[in-house]
Structures are given as structure tokens and as C-alpha cells.
Amino acid sequence: MSERVLRDILGGNRPVSVDGGSNVVEATRIMMRTDAGAVLVMNGSKLEGIFTERDLVKRVVGAGLDPKSTSVADVMTAQIETADPDMKAVDALKTMQDKGFRHLPVKENNKVVGIVSLRDFIGKELTEIQDQQAVERSWADSSR
Image (cartoon, rainbow, N blue to C red; front, top):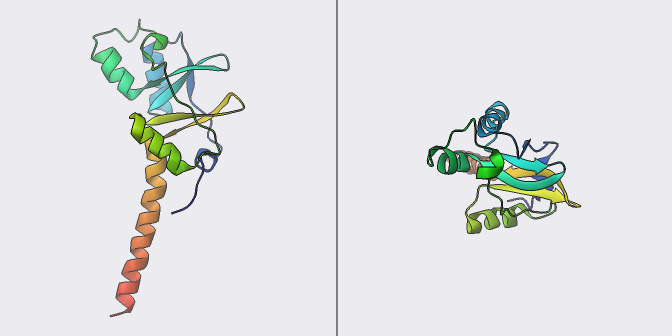
């Protein structure tokens, strides 16, 4: 397996974000349009929190709140961890697993530069496993 760092995973992707005053419907539409499982909640350039699909289910739908009149700031996860873009991917993945979250904002020089999700790790590792299996099958076929 490679020794990727978060910067390698982020590539040129820009983080998806909303203002804390946005309502849940607006945030959800942005998530749908960008195929994102989470949006960063920003106040200008300051990271205030993160709003995830899990927040939508538990804190809005499960709580019976009206998504049109509920601001993202009222239902976001405010206590969030961030990572440096030069953090090893495996260390970030371990942090996410240990803390029980699926999205990790990435900051450099106190500025948000992106967000990684569990699926970012799965794709790369899955590809590496599939490539290794193909090599093993080829080896097995050639030794017959």
C-alpha cells in the first residue's frame, strides 16, 4: 500500500460549504447537486462546523424539525476535528475510525483546503486490492 497523505487525496477538489444561516433544505440541495455526504459550515473564512447526512437524519428528520425553517447552524456538528494536508492517509483514517466520524476537514495555515470522507480512502485501497488480486490470478493462470 502506498504512503499517501491527505494532500494526495484532495487533489484539486474544492470543499463544499454553506453559510451557517442557510436552512437545511438549501444545504441538502447543495449536497445532492455536488454528490457530497457533508458540507462545511463557514462564517466567512472561519470553519464553524460540519453538516452531514447523519446530522440530517438524526437532528432534523428524527427530531421532527422543519428543514425549511431550521438553520444549518442549529443542527450541525460544531465540535469537529481537522487535519493537516500532509497527514498520512492511514493516520487520518485511523482517527476517523477511532472517533466515529466519516468526514474530516483539512486545514492548511488555518484555512480550509478540503474535506476527505471514508469513501475517498475506500476507492484507493479497493483499487490496490483489486490490482493485487489481478496479479495473483495472472500468476496462478501462468503457472498451470
